[in-house]
Image (cartoon, rainbow, N blue to C red; front, side, top):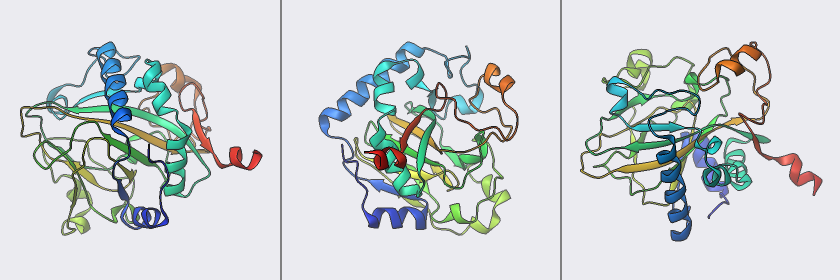
Length: 268
């Protein structure tokens, strides 16, 4: 696994809001990620969340099959997601001292799946931090034909917490951010085993899957350590929500484990 990011990659990420890491996984590691993720997806069945017996419905269900927090229900995925090396990569790119998992997601575009419309990640989440960051690992080749990512570079710098849902209209986000309409998008095709990181406020989207084959990806959204609850439920369980009030620290190790802290290195 290629876990060191260069200064050039850090600077590119901070300027553009995303960066692609080619050949992130070795062929052997890629096979382990594929097997672990698909095992966990199979175990989960039709449940999108571990605690909710309900899948997505309507248009969204035909954008991708989404299975959230597989690390909580499968030990193989847990080992992959809690790897402190991933946390350090995210911390180095974002320029923060600690990284917690917000949630992982298997995002599987089935054959002929709908496109993923332009959106931001952070406004969905239960915390507010301009340093939120996600990893997106290609388990299959992600191509222009099967639904690779696209980014609007630099939009993380001017984004607010206004957002739209992932619906049938690709351009709904530009009703809120008309100043972004003329930004040239950057396509991010990736070979299987490569990955990207993107800021939680950078606008991104994905093509439809125009092939009879699957496009599988494993992702994880990261929360900088020290973030506080903003009142949005997102992935939190009813039990967790009952215990939280706005302003509380989000530091529940069973829900948002700390996977990397610079203080660990200082103690060595």
